[in-house]
Length: 435
Image: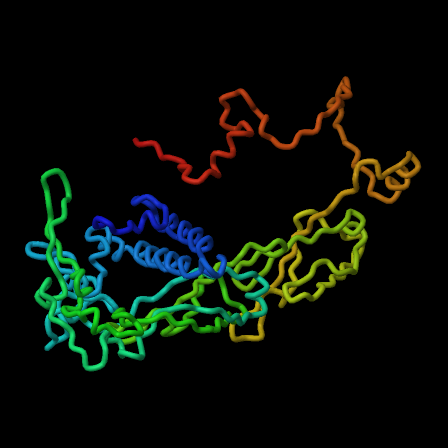
């Protein structure tokens, strides 16, 4: 549950609290793409950067069952530096994390106590929080590999005060609000006439147990201990990479003086749909569009352009009158996606699609006769004695687009439109009758 004034993580991703993992991932993908700093004007980039980090933080917490459960119970207080939910009579975050992760709390998260021998208000120093972002890539980029450079603005420890927040030789004041503990206890309503006691970071000293007066604050960082820094980063995507793989830029996340080392920026690859190829593992699939004449007589021509710009030329000979039929599959070995760190490649599967001539291409009866002369004649229907139809009715036909009207208006489950129900998401399978 969120504290008053605290932005709800579910609202950040615009999902209900009952959302599944798949719904959360889909919402994060949508929000991250629309709010990416690279997609806004320069003057709006800083605001977009803050919003993007909130979106990434919300996804990182809600996509994991353990951290989501902690958030649902305690809100963001469970992850604040120097503080944890609980207080007298309440759960202790260190105990929760010790049960979940084998003792010592979660790396990068503050506990209520410090390292052995540490004083009040101190916390365990671990690695900072990672920043997870989704990165859209084309199939061409995954086929050939890609190196891209981009500008990243992040917090770095102020080099003027070395992360203390104060001027040289200035002494920090003991925080009377929290008595130097870095945390305070407050009451929070949880229902009509009901309140709970929780421990939160001290707002006066930001959970550090001490603070600098305005006149003693560092002139460069204004006491914030960190400053903004723009840096050009390089992202390398190896050839053969796949959807969902993660590219890690180690130590490139925001720096924090309370962390032993900064976290990582992690890019999760999202493969964009391709207009020609469909990928599965290291194999590719595409449509082979040919004419009726080519299906019957063969051909030798470029049938498609590959992901690296090469034209794929296919020679199809028709020995002894063999023909290519619709939906027939042709495999070309070694023309699929490359394997990572290897010269080997998967295979290319071509699904035959025969394009028939347009209506009216046979202009006269003489042309019809010439086609009939070269095509196999229709098979004559052989009837046994006494089975020949006594009468023959000549009928007309009407062309329809689909089978939706088949059995329409009846309650027969075999009717055409009813078959669609089996493919709908969430449709139940056959049920066994109880005896």
